[in-house]
Image (cartoon, rainbow, N blue to C red):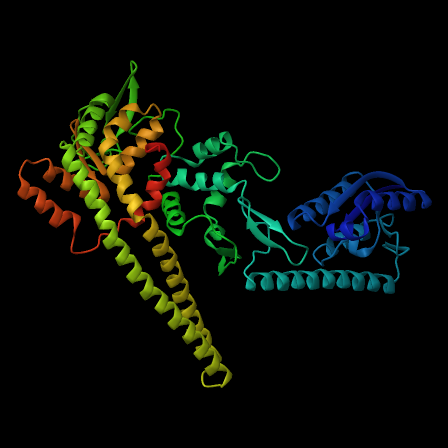
Length: 525
């Protein structure tokens, strides 16, 4: 009689007892020989595989026995054949179709066929129920362990790239993988520039050496998962819920949120064969549509696509646009060297005021954090003394937890800002004075695009004429330059009073991560 073997083993058993699929297959072959059965095929499934994969192999096995007129299915025990009642009707139907069809349970020494006694069918059902109970109990224990792991601040699975797992089974934690941190930071920073599509970023990161734990290339879909994983900012996402994690972070929240905005943006760069300098950077002044760039006889031209009944008809060359933008860079340069030195000194003086501002803010935030800690203690004592209900306690605990998290983030942000404020101001100033030089010397189109995005907040064109708006930091510098390039001392004094010492503190720190992404390539030390 023809038979097939069905082997199933769990990864846990393989680890603890060494009872592998080959060992089980050997045992079933010996049992089949004793019954004088001819083995036609072997089907194997490991429980380390997903539920869909296990189900697929089971269905393939049942389809095979029907198609090839197999009489006997040889399996070690009942729980190796099935562990749920969904499969029972399928198995029963096959057994009852023909008197020659049998289920041979080798270790149990039992044969189930159409002529089996009622107590044998009853025991078959009992064993299936026991197997299903075992699976459900195992699932409950796993979920309980995962929940406990999350409550301790650790993710109950492998962390994303940039982290590694250490510790023994049941006590594993995630730490920073120093060998991959620079590349992961680079990945976030490059995408935050807005110059890279996911496909382009995947290629760039492969060239720079970013690989998974098996040394293989990271595909686009996986890269997207990494860019959207809140694990990098101290949050554990599990079953679509976020909990606070204890892992060390190396990606700032501002940079992470900027990446999320770009990923959701409709103007996120798409992969294109031609990487034109001004793609997705300039819009039509009349209809606000993006300018399209094409190559004709070796010359790059831009024009409006008239998607919104636009009346613009002029086609303009890329070089014509560059000439106009270079003039915009020149407007940021200070003509008088003495005034340039004066502005550098003024920027240094403003750092003193900025430090005082951040110190005062930091003291206030620390006091707020201390107050929240006291409130946590108070509501806990009130709960123990039964002065408040469990529901009210949970509500206030959630509220205070959110406030504590926001305050802690603000403290971290101010601590970083106070040490980097002066450096940022000086770098922006130096960049403004060398913008034209940097642009003209840059041979890489992406570096030119980075500079354009950093200096200009908005670029539009009307019949070939460029209109531009400087970004916040460079807008302030342009106002100062416009005044200081004048020969009148009154204008200089006015500039110092109205621009370098504003009545309201102007916060340019949200631009920091964007600037530091460009800093290494634009302003070499």
